[in-house]
Amino acid sequence: MNPLTMDPVSPAPAAQPFIEARGLRKSFQSAAGGETVLRDVNVSVRTGEVLAITAPSGAGKSTLLKILGTLQAPDAGTLTYGGVAVDFRDQRQLARLRASRIGFVFQRFNLIPFLDARENVELALKLRAMPQRQRHIQALDALDIVGLAHKCRALPATLSGGEQQRVALARAIAGAPSLLLCDEPTGSLGQDAGQRIFELLQSFAQLHDRAVVLVTHNESLARQATRRLYLHDGCLQGGAP
Image (cartoon, rainbow, N blue to C red):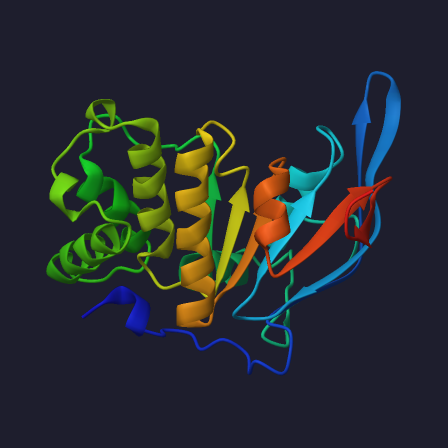
């Protein structure tokens, strides 16, 4: 069975935001004192859309993405998935969310060098404790979707940068997550390879009714997204500066 036809945890109805954040604040302490990177962030994302977030380096884009992905707790504010409030103190709830609803795609591919492409994709599926044969099938299906089924036995070192990023994308979508969070996924790729990755993300959102949040410096890709927001002085604003 194709993993993207599976829906282990159904997304919220299209009329309602799948993920919604209100009043997010986040500060960090350093030798120079306190620094507030998120001041009062409000954002919602519906299934079927690609939301692009742009900002200068160091503006807090990655911090926001980590909070949306429940990898980091905000100092204040609320986050809901499918209408259910996230409790950042409940580690079991957070683990379930990340395993069943969220896929991560990073600029650095984070592939295990001694595992082949299929084995790398299977890593995300092991968190679901599914039978090995089912993991094999879903991993191969995900690689097929990104056009790399024929490279399933290839080690990362033998793949090009674009191919490694497609393996990382296959790993993110193999479990059919309701939300993909992408942190500069095309930053280390050329324009053509980056465009292909974006088109795969766009297809995943539109054809399979999933939500995609894309943090990027790439103006061309940001303009192709369903919506675009700009992070400025800790707040999200519509469009570009």
